[in-house]
Each structure stands twice: as C-alpha cells, then as structure tokens.
Figure 1 (cartoon, rainbow, N blue to C red):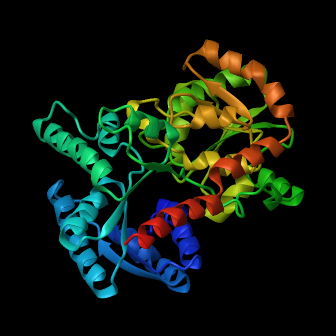
Figure 2 (cartoon, rainbow, N blue to C red):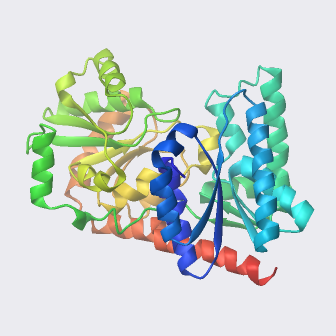
Length: 398
C-alpha cells in the first residue's frame, strides 16, 4: 500500500466499500524502504478510514524462495484474521494472493474473489522476466497457467480489468460459462477534473517548466517501464515536430530524466524540446492540464489483452485528447465510444503522419464527450458500486 499503485488502485476502493457498510481487513506485503518512508501516512489514512491494516515485509531475495516465504506469511496472517474476525470473503488481487484464497477455501470454507488484474504469468513471459528457454521458469509458468484455470473455476467470483480478457477466457474450451465481472482501473473523477485547473495555475506551471504559451504540448503520464514504448513515442514526436515546429514533449514521470534525454538525443531530438517533471498524485491533474494532447504506446502483446492503463481514465476525465495504439485491453473500443483521440495500428512513420493529419479535428473537439466517456467507463464511484455488488452477493450467500 506504500506503492503509488496501492494508493490509487486499492485504498480508494476500500474506503468506498467501508462507507457502504463492509468491514475490511487489509493484508499486504510491503517493500522495507518504502514502508519506512510511508508507513505513518498510510497507517493514519487507513485508520481514519476504519480499515484494519496487516502489513507483512515483502522479500525479494533469493528469487522464488522469497515468494514462497511471502505466500506462507500471507497464509498465516490470513488464517489468524479469518478465525479471529469471522471473515466472510477473501478478496485476492492477482495470482500470488490467489494461492492464499484457494488455501483458505480448502481449510476454512471461506469464499474468495479472484481479482485477476491481468494475465500475470503471460505478462512475466512477455516482459522478458521469465525466459521459457530456462527450464525452471518454464516449470513456474506452466504451474501458474494451470493455477489460472483452477482459480477461474474454483473462485466464488472472478473480476477482470477488461472485456477483451473476459472474451478471451470465454473462448477457451470449458470456460464459456465462467461468470466474470469487468471492472477497469478507475479514476478518482473528483481529483481528475477539468475544473481543477485555473488559468493562473496553468500559466504559472508553463512558466515553471519554461513552456511558451503558444507551444503545442504533447504529454506522457506515468512510469516508462517494461511495457511502454518510449522509442516509438519519440519517433512519433519527431514526426509531429514537422507539422508543429513549436511542439514540446512533457513527461510527467518519476523515472530518470537523464534516460529520457539520452533516448531523445539518439533520435536527433533537441533537449530543449523535452521536459521531464516528477509530480505527486494531487499535482498530476494540473500538470497534465498543460497538454494539448497526451499519448501512450504499450506493447500490443498477448498479455496486454487484460491491461487497463490507469492513465487513460485520468486523462480522459480531464478532457485531454489521446493518441494510443490498438491491441491493448479495451483502449481502442473505449476511445471509439465517445473518447476523443487517435488510435495507431502500426508503429511506422506512415501511420504517424496519417494520425497527425487527423490532429486538427481532434484538437477542435470539445472535451465534454471525452469527460462523459470517462465517467461512463472509469468512474471510481461506479467501480466501488460494482465491487460492492460482488461483495454483497457473496456475503448474502455465505
């Protein structure tokens, strides 16, 4: 919970669920360095929200054995919590914690939710973390692919981030009837709203970042890790500069500025056209609001069928036009259903030039339809209501 993702994609949902009347005990593995830095803040936040927090030290070494240790620690903590507090439902986020849900179901008869978050085992392979040429990693991959099917069939409820992943699972022989609820990575629309910016704030931020007031600002929001295609995004920006010579590329990220500048230099992009800014979560809406448009390219691999980019709902709720690629979760279908932006199908200069020709129409479009689309798909309030429906249904039949 001390990681940014826990603070954006776990805690807000649980706070909302507590308000609907559920009692929540939160078990999490925490990285020691971040835990020391953030534990007081998170502990107070959860205490104020009436959420009981049971943090466990996350171990990363040695590989594999450390994960087994963490799973055992989670099983022990979950067992004590279930017996002491008469827990009705265990909500397991992703595949490792699902091992605990399966265990609790066998030992205590506890109902559990497989909140799969994505095709995790395939993500490890697609991301190059597990090399299938290594017999050990191939054995682990095959183990979790078997467990994936067990989870889908044995869990009392299944949640997917995307309709694309749900359709994929239902295409598997014997899985057509598995009930799956789709809940994407939602955005806090009370934080990410167009009214959160003022002309004075935007002007001050432009001055702070040395961005001329007439500049075309293409932005990127978030980390630049395994899945995000920085090289291709810089290629797009270089083509964009041919049509918009006053264009600047603003990266709102906690990642290394030097890495971005070095990549840009290799592409022949002048450092003066790049801005890199780290921002706290509550600062992101105002920094993003400088954008003329925002973009993200994600590797369109098999595992990405189940991916729901958190940034998409946040940017759409600000009314910002998007430039994205197809082949990732429900990105293309959502953007075509009222969102304002452009979908790239191929990563080449011809596709980029075609997209840039469409930009004037996109930029002239009022943001209302994009904001309405964000509310339709990414509302945190609606996400909480969907989770509440799953919780209430399972609790009622316990």
